Image 1: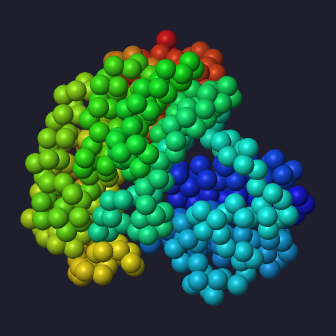
Image 2: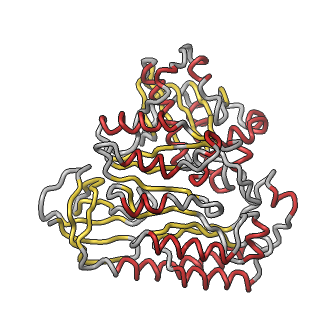
Length: 431
């Protein structure tokens, strides 16, 4: 083990990753050598930033902690700290179940970790991060928490009420990151649509993105996790009119059946959803919509599922993910609805939905063959350079494989003529 070195392992979403980056910067300033998600953990202290969203993510967090607990017993690490959403939600249970963990910190009290290590938290570094992404892109978290209280979701139980980051801090951070070489900003929040409501009583997302787009060096801005109800439509002229705002929107719709949407407490109807999608496509030509759908929620019979299948087929989402409902303790659904759909039925529905989407994705990708697209280069593999278009968010969306017909530089943009399409990849040649 390396003395004065701290390894941080981030699990779950990109919002967790941003928290880890802020912590890494504080630890670095305190004089520690730091590493993030290293292939070989060799620091004397290891911090696990956990996810507590759904059962599979919770289990991944537990398995990681148990594995590191074994490493601690073998003398490979000295201190094991656990932070994040799982610790926020189930701290008392975890303390009892995992005695090998030295200290637990929730989602918001991890700043005391510095004090426990014998260092003061530096407020002057509040707006700085140790980037763990490739240097040309980052995630920008503009708010924390959620006021929507959907029936299935435990996020408000973990993060609390919606709290926006003041705009001037986000603009200052953007300028600082541009100075470090960041070109692509992936805007994230539990509820992007509500940004600013707690600060001014009005939706400020359009103003924020417009002002970010004015900053020299910002090449791409991409929006993630909008909420469909009370959507801030003023963002659409910004997306359509600014060259550096990607025509891409990640907006989780979950379902289309009025019965299921009501049970989910989504505050939106089928017709309102259809109107929203029509307006997005009308006002932002060429927009690529990424959504998430859920199968197996209580009250979803075969008729409601077929309605969902038909909706996904007609909507022809450019990007789509799906998951099966799992009951989460403390949520409205867990307290008021019976999780009575067998697991095998949920999995069958999930497979049918995703098989249909693979065919749609193939059609969407095939439409790009012959086009010349602007691509940012993420990395160099043995046979290809690998990049993304403005419609591809890191790690979750398709990639572009670029033939090595000419030398390219990671982090640069290039024009790529698309020659071949697969459901989740494009292949092309740099011009």
